[in-house]
Amino acid sequence: MRLRNRRRRVYLQAFLSLLPLILILLVLRVYPIAVAIGKSFTNWDGLFQNDWIGLQNYVEFVNSGPFLMILRNTLILLLNVPLQVFIGLLVALLLYERVMGWKFFRSVVYTPQIISAVIIGYLFRIFFGFRGPVNIVLNAVGLERLAIEWFGNPLTALGVMVISIAWYGIGWQSIVMLGGMSSISHSVFEAAIIDGANYWQRAFKIVFPMIIRVIEFGVIASGVWTLTQLFPFLHSMTRGGPGYETTTLDYMIYLKSFGFSFGINFGMACSIAVILLFIILAFTLLEMRITNRAELGR
Amino acid sequence: MYKRATLRGFLVFLILAVLTASFLYPLYFMLINSLKTRTEYFVNPFALPREGLQLINYTTMISQFKILTLFKNTFIISTGTVILILLVGIFASYAFAKLRFKGKSVLFVAVLMTMFVPSQVTIIPLFVSFSKVGLVNSYLSVILAYLALFLPEAVLLLTANFRGILDEMVEAAEIDGCSYLQKIWYVIIPMGRAAIFLAIIFYFIMSWNDLFTPMIFLTKMEKRTVMVALASLMGRYSGSPTYQFAGLLLSAIPALIVYFIFQRNIIRGLSMGAIK
Image (tube, rainbow over all chains, first blue to last red; front, side):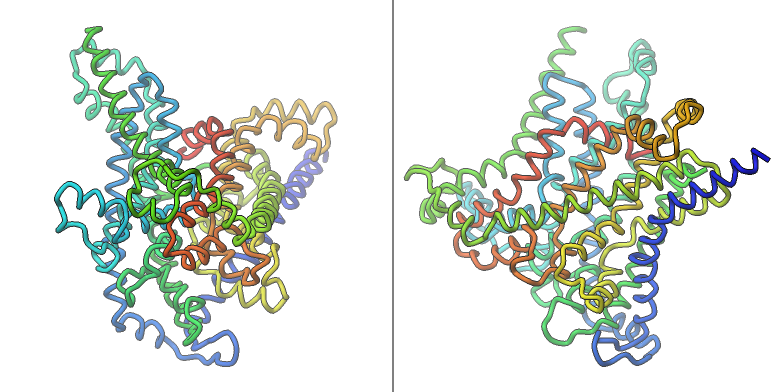
């Protein structure tokens, strides 16, 4: 009898503890996602039009000119992932040596993550401006041919973005990898040193295999991040332009909904959002399988 | 052996020092150029200011930018977000970490599934709903959006940490006659303070730095946050980089101060909690 009372009390506690969380997520996450999916089949403009048009938005978007451009831009921007993971790993290996002042170096490397992406975007915009410091240096060392209008051409503009995003992400990657490395026990290292393994052998044969899952996590997390969080970078550097030349999916949603004062098309924006949603869902499932985060709940 | 190790140590130190310099240089560059005249900047952006420190760049930014109002707006939003995340997150994480009930793992996975849904997907329906109930242009609209956006991750962080608290501690508190709220107040919060502290700093900085959500929800000038105002200001001053540098630096400073005070907690939390 007392046991049953106790169990009932636990259920009541769990229910009350979780109720606010569940209500917030239902009202502010699940419901808007459902609305976005529903409205993606309409010509909704937020005010008067709200007619069912089936898959027309999707068909129109996939067949439109910007679609292939967005695909190209996304693929180019994803290049920041290998770049930041690779440099992040190198920095983590260097920090792992624990030389004098390594704690200071570690906290400086993480600093870009603390600065708003908006600020970093404008900073790179100024640095790579036509009369900016990068071109001044290029002119001074006799590489005038390279001192171009970086944001005048979509490919170089995307290149600058890749660099700025990698610069922003390196700190996070290296701290997370360093965290993974510190779980490697020192006796493994000592044994390897006794067996005569040199530095590179130790790095590639011991450290690398032991943090491969951390690296996988870093790749997927920054991949998802690249697909969803580039808004401040794009907004500060190119606003997706010229035309749609540097636009991505997430920026396109903004352009189609709030970006222009004319031609607002919430229905179209919702259908792009749904496409993005499914891409992210696929990534998330992959990520959960890899890190086994789901096991926490058991 | 010893000698080789120190040589290598020196090389590593050197590389790290160069890397560190490349991370600090943009901040230094912003600082020196925010104190120059426009001509001085275009003549040589790498030199130190020679014609005296142009504090006028900062005073102009502060008056044009109404930076104190912006700081106040952003502070209200960030603080409100953090308080609500803790209020909801601590109870939910306690239930996930310490209570046994049916359907827990399914529920936990469902909560995590919403973690990566980007704000762009929900922003249009939220905007329309918020404007129906008159929430647009209120701090609460941004706070609620952040709350929904950050809660799943915060719950993951706190749950992982609370699971490390010994069951015996909670049981002992129960035997001592602690009520449910007392258990959380006297056992869970003190024992999980590292993660709670990390969440406070982390989500404060996240909300301080965000652009997208406040840009959509706050259209009135006097309600804008720092980053929204900065984005519109940068376009207006595109011809005068020295003003831009002053504006950029001013908006970066609050988050940087928070980081340099609490960096130890942030880095320890990141290297422990990010991966399970």
